[in-house]
Length: 514
Ligand code: NOJ
Image 1 (cartoon, rainbow, N blue to C red):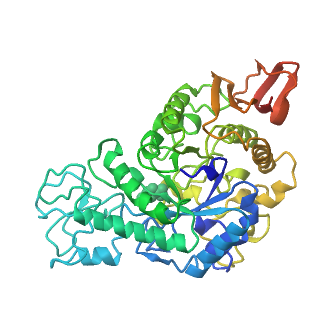
Image 2 (spheres, protein in one colour):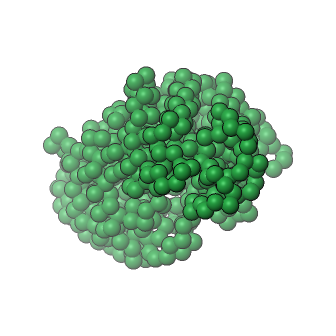
Image 3 (cartoon, rainbow, N blue to C red):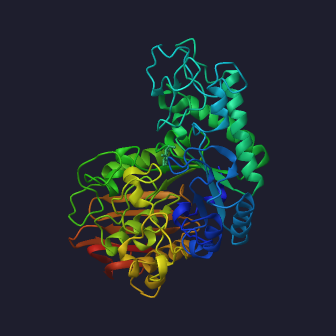
């Protein structure tokens, strides 16, 4: 567990769409480096989605070569420059570790498909006959080797061989077999390679499913613990963040520093922001808590949050996210004032919050035709809106930008919004500044007390005799709550205090320190 990050905020950059430094219409690594001062206003850890050489049939989550940077993003020198510049600003950079599968264009897989046995034959999970029974997601009849291979996600993403929790077929490897241990070494090598380039850690893709038939991810946890243990011998401060959604497994058993609470598990996240039909990549239908209508609930979220918190205190952290490249934008169906309440909540919870690029300005979600395997996720990956200028300040190109820029960019952009004291951007900045100035001692493990989990939600965090109180009212009703008299107001929106009573008008928030 890396204690130094306990009060961090993560900013997630989708690299094709953040900033284009060379005018080809696509965002790149130099572009991220040039915007570090902007990011620093909101966060101190930057997570960059995959930039490795890739056919890009799943936004780079189909890696063709782990040791090469895709030319659209730049060079390995650009990686070193990014980490150097980030470190000079006291920031950290996380890359994406996508090792549950490779692209089917990866040289390892090309070799593995061959009929003759070779060094790579067991790198992937093959059964021993194309006509044999295979109850797993697989591809069949596409190569000379007489076998079906398991895939993890899309058809071109063959699963690397981390083995099975239990061996039930002759062709399966137990997760501790030599063939699987070879894959562990391969992964350790990739991690160390980038740590040497200055990368501070990784967000780990599909972390919960590397070992197959693995109940509660127990064996996957064992494997990650082994891999991270080896890395930490050399890099004790390496940061590993899991795409798992169950910190009680990933952090408590799998040695991850942070686990994202995202869409994977309904109670963990959807019911806060994306419960309505059309708001989630995995279908759901209902009422989010963060809705003016005030018909949602956050009780189940807190049950889940507190159960996981109890399991991980002292071991690591959770991360509640504003969004990511797989989810519709949080702005969908919400006004800037409503979005401020979302940020007031996620930045106050005992966690390491994540801001998805552009959520701080309320970048819109537009349904778009799929690009690079994005499908319904494509609309959340549009170019960052920096200004009201050419291509929203994203690129100097006269041609097409990576994805079309949303037409609202003349008003929804970081430059214009920075000038407006009431903008979402300045609201988020004020919250981040208050968190940095006053909540430094309030580690995620420090005392947490849920005062009420209705409308408004009220919770306290207690540390060294100081009490931080957060009250958020996403609904349009007005509520009055008791607060400590004379408390210092750290941040507020649409709320007021008289004596020991606070009035939370419709769509409001209040942060107090007593
Ligand atoms: C999760 C990533 O977030 C997503 O974008 C990707 O498509 C899958 N894993 C497969 O790697």
